[in-house]
Length: 98
Image: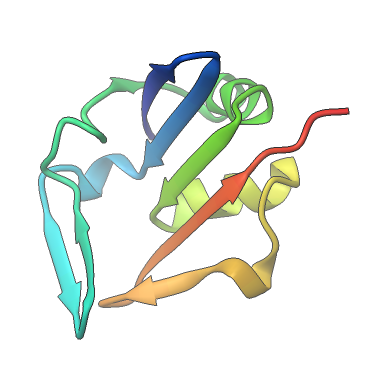
C-alpha cells in the first residue's frame, strides 16, 4: 500500500491507498476519488509500517480494500463508516488518542 504523511500545524493527516489504485480517478454521482493527486502520492509500505502510522495519526483517509481493511483491523474506522465509489472502498476518520 502507498502511504503519504501530511503535517499541518500539530496534526498528522495520513492518506493510505492500495498501490494498484494510485493514478486513477473514480466518480459516481457527486462523489469523486482522485488518486492521481499529490495527496496520495507517497511511499510504499507494508501492513505493519502502515498500521503503526495509522494508529499514531490524527486524521486518516483510506482508499481500497487492503487499506480500508487495515483501518478496520487497527480500530480507527468502523464498517458503517465505509463508502463505495465505483466499487472502491473509502473511509475517513479522526483518530482519538487517550
